[in-house]
Image (cartoon, rainbow, N blue to C red; front, side, top):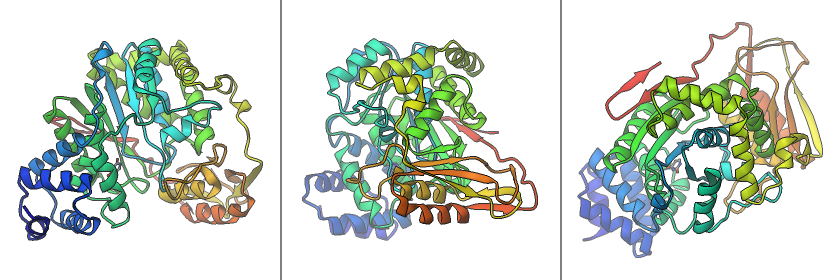
Length: 440
Ligand code: URA
């Protein structure tokens, strides 16, 4: 078999066989097929697409390219949750403790932020002392003792995806539906949970900018999950506006704590409750309305917040900052962004809001960069709210004064102010299961 022929077949719109997909995934992981041939194939896939069978086989081969986690030692149905990435998306920090507080174990491997999107691991590591690098044995022990653990990848999970993702990142082939679906689902399958709830973001801060593309991506991922024996449901949620008010690591942990204590922002609370209800329902805890009630009780009783503290303590974190977020070390520089004119906020270019936060130090440009845990943005105003000229619309936090002007300009360009109050945007657009797309 020759890589040249595989590239040509896909370039001409052909369907790759199981053997051809196995050949290029194995060869690329082993280093016997060079980057330039695989990048050419990625571009051919970008333009020609893949059939559901090709996507399923690609996912399977990537999932089995390295270690797979066997969670069977942990009793009960384990449910995972994955977001396709967004700005201000701290839902895992809320949803996982809520679900664990309802008796469903959560054994979750999360990622770091890259580009304009944040990552759960960076947020958790803003808790002083907390380490997300733990051995598998300790990971299982924490899940059994506390009910949840969110950690970095253990072992060598889906190494084929690691190489392919890095290559796609620099060859303009990230936003291809079959490549995103197989990349995400290969890691989810290898991570071993029995059921998966996907939070597929849609809008200006998401990979998929339109609702129809987001639904297609969700359907592809749900099919892959179910085909592999994992109950899988996807919610399509809005990323045309940052979620909540905080963007940046310790700022987001603070907002997650407020939400777990029952007084978080309404949009973040609603998305978290819906995700948690779906996870609980997949774990057999009842219908969606029954599970919603369970999730709400987990928050109002304080049990969910205790779960977050339990996990943070087990990972070596100083939980006093969760009891009193004022104890988080503060960024030395705080600067306010003022509204340049009066009116209503009509639009927020969400990706740009994420970039402004990254410029302040909350994000990284390359995987090796360190993030500043205290840097970021707190939005004082969001879409639909009225502002008067000179009123504060956002607060910028940084340790690097030289970044302030650039971040301020990016944010001012990203926040549009108009004369008319815009119609409210939906928070959740659809729920996708193996046999239905329920639009809201
Ligand atoms: N997240 C992933 O893990 N992979 C993609 O391709 C896109 C988002």
